[in-house]
Length: 209
Image 1 (cartoon, one colour):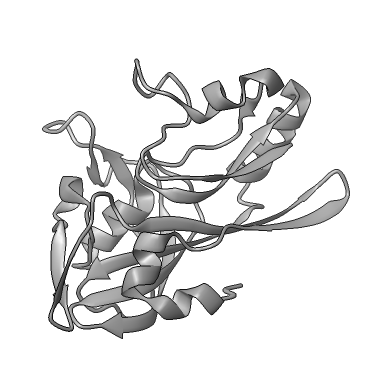
Image 2 (cartoon, helix red, strand yellow):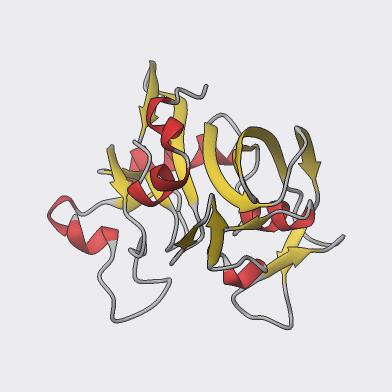
């Protein structure tokens, strides 16, 4: 398998858009198989496979909820520790977006407040399921707006201790993936990106798990 620390602004593969460099393009010498996806603006641990059989096995682990996923988000507002269980489906008014809808696919996310800095909260998100835009939709559902996430009502700037900070992407980071593969327990982590550390320096030493 291949694990990479995906930077913001890079898409996973060409099915998501055209004419832009992708993670798969940059690893084309490995001819990787996509196991799961991260949104274009999301940073952090991305898992790919070198072989089709490995991709199938890892894909089953994701589908059967055997992969433990930990994300960190920065959002405006305050959050109580909670379990968000709300089905998600396409938003007919916005082709790129998702929304809560009773006829959607079940989606569960556990949220925990890590730290508050002025109007911003640093939030741990542990999704049990893997729906498109799941964490971003569930944050919005509990009145949290992911910084830089204009698609779901976030703002691109915030005053923190007298300084104006601007976000050019949704501040969401795939921090950790833990799972078993071929008899081995694997624990993969990606360091926090600079734009999130600027707002919450303590994240440099975090060891969520």
